[in-house]
Length: 135
Image (tube, rainbow, N blue to C red; front, side):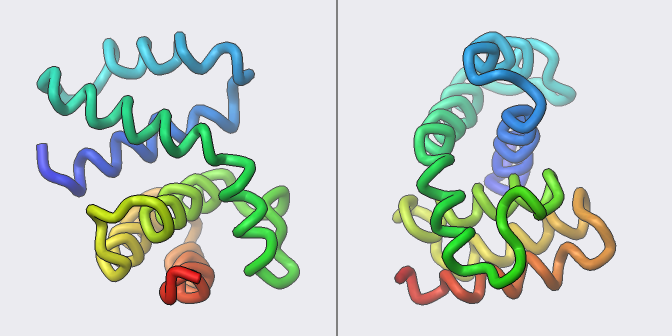
C-alpha cells in the first residue's frame, strides 16, 4: 500500500472520531483494522494506528490552530470530512517531519476532491496555505 492509500486509511479512521465517544475509539480502531476494505500488512496496520494515535492526541491543539487561522470558520462550522482532512494535513505540516509541506497540502486537496463537498478542495487549499510556512 502506498503513502496515499495509507493516508486515506488514516483519514477514514480519524473521521470516526466525529461520530464516537472518546472511550469508544480503541474499539473503533480494532474494528477498523479488522474490517478494512483492503488487506493490510502488519506493518501497514502499525503505521496507520500509530499515526492515528499521534493525531488523536493532538486534536484539541490542532483545532485551536485551525480556529486561530480560519476567519469566520471555526472547527464547529467546518464540515466533518473537511475538518478531518485539515486535522490530518496540519498535523503532517507541523509535527510530521517525514512529510514535506507541499506533499501534505497536495494530498489533503486530493482527499478533499474525493471525500469533501464541491468547494472543499479550494477551502482546504486556502486554509493550509496559512500553515505552509510551518508557523
